[in-house]
Image: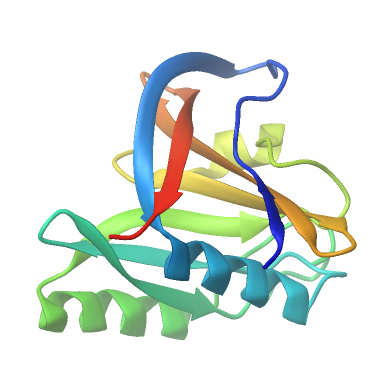
Length: 155
């Protein structure tokens, strides 16, 4: 199993650090890591759904951005399909995730300015090489990303 670094990093402009935390099942974290490993040279992206208070399903979505190694843009058709599937399954949007192939597990200025679902967490995966990665979690409060801790374990 890969090494997971899920703590608080240094403060970034536009990001506040708090003591809040979220719980992610191990299987979900492993799915995000595996998704990022498939295309380590470009940003991967998708949605996480929650049902009955538990993170239930990942919805990987193709990145259709022209410069996919530096940014992500979700395939519009797949995004609509994911929301439709969530509704049909009685799920709600929990988080939007993406990776940073050449950065860190912290949001970029672009991530902060383009976050369109303020009720959803933002999860960022950074592959650190040799089977390890970092995972950062943030939520939007009054237009500012607030970093939250991640607890990983059984649902």
